[in-house]
Length: 209
Image 1 (cartoon, rainbow, N blue to C red):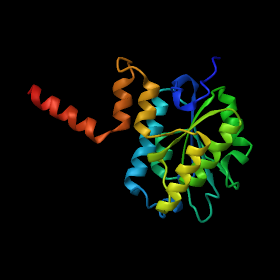
Image 2 (cartoon, rainbow, N blue to C red; image 1 turned 90 degrees about the horizontal axis):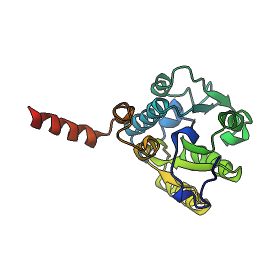
Image 3 (tube, rainbow, N blue to C red; image 1 turned 90 degrees about the vertical axis):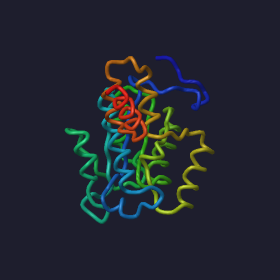
Image 4 (cartoon, helix red, strand yellow; image 1 turned 135 degrees about the vertical axis):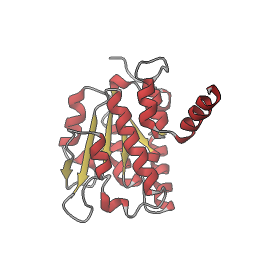
């Protein structure tokens, strides 16, 4: 397997080398999210999960104390990845539960996308730990959420200091798609459900009539 460039920002995502880790997208935690609307957050994480499945990218779900105050994983996400059972843990850093790194290692893949609630803890901590462990880790900003502007700023600053790239959900998916001539392209774009792209398509279709 070829090694990634030492600068993670130069390494392009490959669908056959990527794993998606979604941490703590739970009903109770969503009630506190303030840096993005709950509707947008649900849309983005579900779209990312659907696109990953289409591209053959493994999706790993985890939640913390899902029978307690943080509640279950949001039903929209569970519906998007049928057959994927959340790994329920007690550790704050998902990476500290040995089942999480073991599940990632089992795939044999070295690029890791992480999204979670909250950004500065549930997404940031496992991304940092994965980087220490030698993975090419990225955080998906608009499929993560947090509770205050300061928490968002703190999380982004820590990721930047550690050299962990931050991406958006659609860019991550199209980077893995790589070619619009790919037979899966239409299905991927449909899953991403980008409003501006839908409008462009509608305008184009309207002009043909």
